Image 1: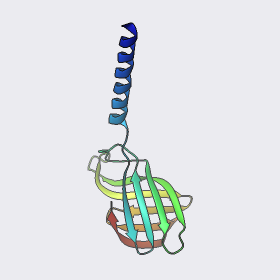
Image 2 (image 1 turned 90 degrees about the horizontal axis):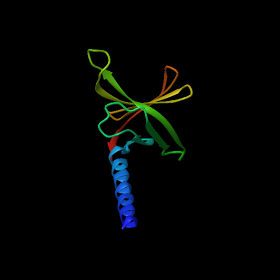
Image 3 (image 1 turned 30 degrees about the horizontal axis):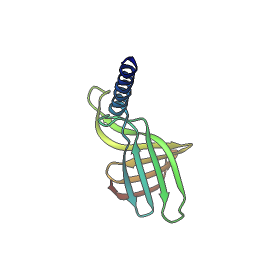
Length: 127
């Protein structure tokens, strides 16, 4: 009888831990921006419902050359009047050395070297 109680407690513990992990694990959420020259897959690696996310993955593929790049970045938003609270979502920003990639919620893909705009294309989002 003691062995069956131990097995029952172990099973409940395993089920409880599995349930907690399922409830607290961040679900990755992804969408793809397709422009004339690039396919960019953006994955938010933060819990659903987070207004801001500092763990966003950019996987970009040049459709002409087949080359790809993987970067980690963050969401960008305007701030409310209090200067702290995020208000309107603008898009995503990624840094690669002196190169900055901006992917706008409006479908804009921009690549900067320092302050110089190297590339700008518009595309459409899909899930």
